[in-house]
Image (tube, rainbow, N blue to C red; front, top):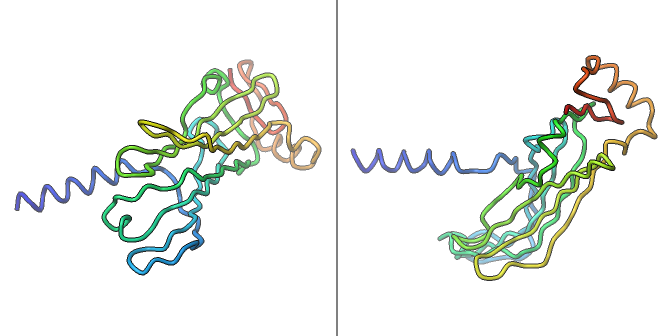
Length: 184
């Protein structure tokens, strides 16, 4: 009975540690006789501080027997792209000014991880998302960046007008810039 409770408790703890990402799909790259094939996986996640902005991440995943026993080390190859997924993007400028790790997943048993950092450019009202991998001893210089601007859809005036009409009037502590509702 105690063993069953320990197994259930461990399962709940592991589930709680998972990323808040949705798996979108995968593409097989190398056939493995034992275990899963090597593949590229695609996941989507929402930035926790920027409502209406979602990022899509693709990364290499090593399969085979090592993955079955959780001893694989994934390659440092990854890419990120972020897009607007709501009529208006809303955020507090004071919260996003400091760089923040918005995503992290393990790329090996204990020593390597894949991370996405968010940077905010207040002058251009734009976000940059950088994906990279790190390792305790030596990381990798491989990285990818995606940039998104509040002013990116301003040329499409009909979208901005619709977006502005669906947002309540700005308060003294907030402003509308392009497709963004920015609170101070």
